[in-house]
Length: 122
Image (cartoon, rainbow, N blue to C red; front, top):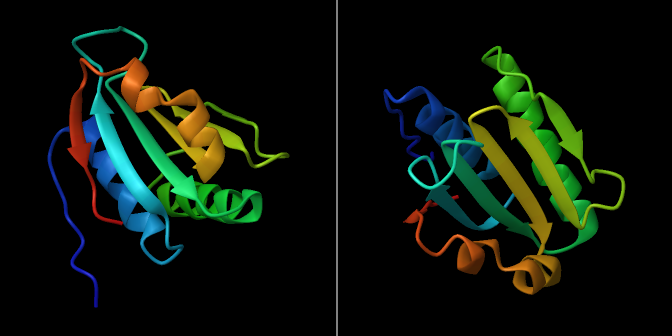
């Protein structure tokens, strides 16, 4: 049985719930970037990889389904059809689910290198 974390900061709680939702989907390398002090667009970016476009779509579906059970619905979903870069916008948390080579190409972690980075265990 997997030990699932809980916290009290609302936006970080969404990040933790999303990562917990990814555990069974075998998501790769989840990283939370706290961008709150760098931008007003969100508190966190969560960056996750899948081994294929179908895997990325499955991860995104798992996140949407699990957060929905807590009454948390995305404001928008972009890129689901191709599965290369799926963006799930939850207002103060923006989740980026990438097909691995696309994640490497766009390197959001590098672009947001000043953000506080937290490696999350999926």
